[in-house]
Image (cartoon, rainbow, N blue to C red; front, side):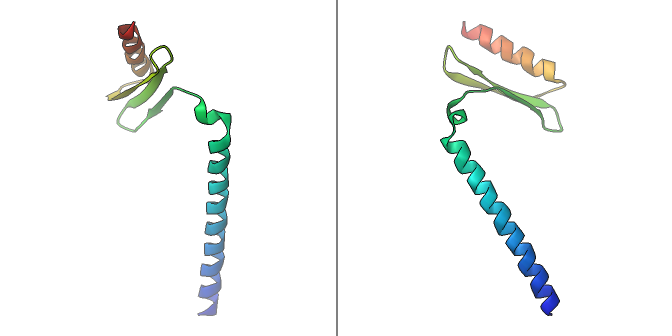
Length: 86
């Protein structure tokens, strides 16, 4: 019984330590200048590629939530959207 207790205690201590490290990293990110930086992102969700792009001129994000076959199709849609804004 004591062995199970110590295994559980050690696992819990590791979890708490990792959680604290994650919270510290998030706090650093919040105070960092990257908080205010706009960016684009593309990813594969398993059923297709999706992404978002930020348009500086119009101060807007475009989120492409329709699964695309490849990364280039996502960016083609993003470029079409940016062109349509003028």
